[in-house]
Length: 352
Image (cartoon, rainbow, N blue to C red; front, side, top):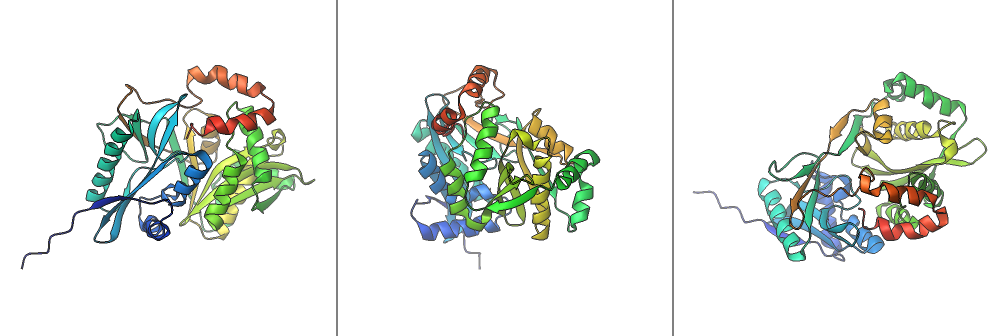
């Protein structure tokens, strides 16, 4: 007898209120080796509610089983253009699939959708190259490293100079606490990005992350011996990984080594939880954050963001390294922080 032919893959769109399909989606993401935290279904609700972007969360199904997912959102801005992105505000994206047929079907549907929406470009935030003939951008790298089983082994794995900074923070009697409210973290984050001349996300966005993801999202705040908040980080937990994602600090944090202490404390706690990977996240090459992570002994891995260009001739450069934004950055630094925090969410929604 000849084998029964396989059914064809069908591409469907996840409904915003389809809880049953969302659970199936997330079960697939948890099991798929190429999926990331940013492939989870809750991002569709967050991006729609917090930023107003229409989500197109596509999944490929065969005989009732999901074989691939591709979360996308439409980002439309007078300042920064019109794009279909997988996924805004995420460092990783693109297709997560267990079959080549599902991956191809999802990317074909994404391109067809991009044309129907009339976007200027489609952007897929891949870790590895998938299409050598597509324009791509290698501006960003990611830093990932194994968490060792023993706490002291993790301390000794930090290069000597950076390890001395961690020990300095410990000697300064700094204190780390977990917050379920985003308030203290937001104050540190907003002050930090203001000093760098970039707009802040709204506080409600960070609270939504904590509320939507529950135990998979956590804020750690480092305070001085006197109780003054110095540095904070909002981290995600996915499978056996911890991903410190949003961070901020006060001016006093550097002298007290609060930032080094913060990341050590996060790593130490992750070790205690039995986690295996510390994902230090994305940085632009040649920046201070890139150097900081290298100094911790992490090696960069290039991120290969790929594009289909429809109404533009070059890959967009909507980032602070672009020279045309330097005057805007300098002007932003001079704004009172209360004004910057009010105005920032209206701008940053389009910078995802």
